[in-house]
Length: 270
Image (cartoon, rainbow, N blue to C red; front, side):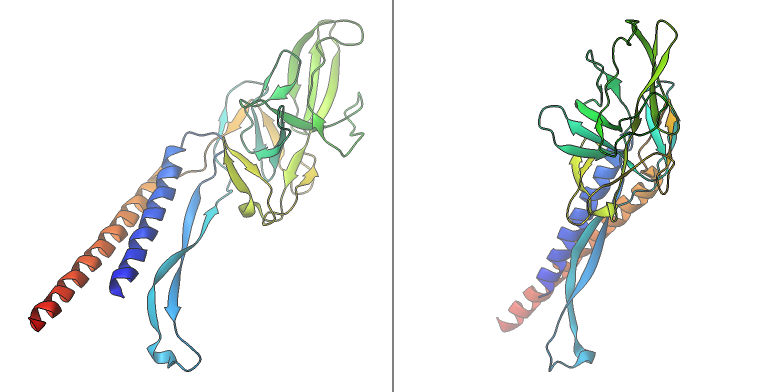
């Protein structure tokens, strides 16, 4: 039994090493959230077993939990680089597949048709507003900046307010609010499914997204010209890497010791 107990330990240490390695690899990924491995012990027994003699048979991976602590904020100067100063996720929709994704990576850009999107062409979602910036519908739509205004003047600039209002400036000096950035919140964000590129999808564990305005309720305000960096603490991860390595070595040593004991028992019989 000791062989399999230590084998489980090796597998668990390997999972821990993989999670830590993934964290370290994404230390420079904007909007990335670190994960940690949670373990639980395994015991065997029955209704008639003596509880004082209950024997453990190792450990198992209980969960790989994400930590959504706010990462450091880096100033970039680009109007469409946006950081959330608190809770919430940007909501985006794929231009081709139409899937809804959620992200903390606010690095956006504008295409030739005026759509604001991320590097994977997922379009930023906003609440429709009137000219004064008042929300007119609770159903988000894809953010699109008109390339000319009603007077025919060409688009020249875009700004994002801390309240989420996206304003487009035109050559005639006019400024129009084209929408308010919609933020998504979840009852259990640790239940979100990672899909890569600092994106998540809602699951039954996370619950459905609750949409709201920046700076209202639990949602944080926005910081234009800034990006949220990874929340990975490299020093903490390196210490964890050493610990996981020692755990792996200790379990390997336990297997080696069990092998020697078995060999001794076999030699006694011969």
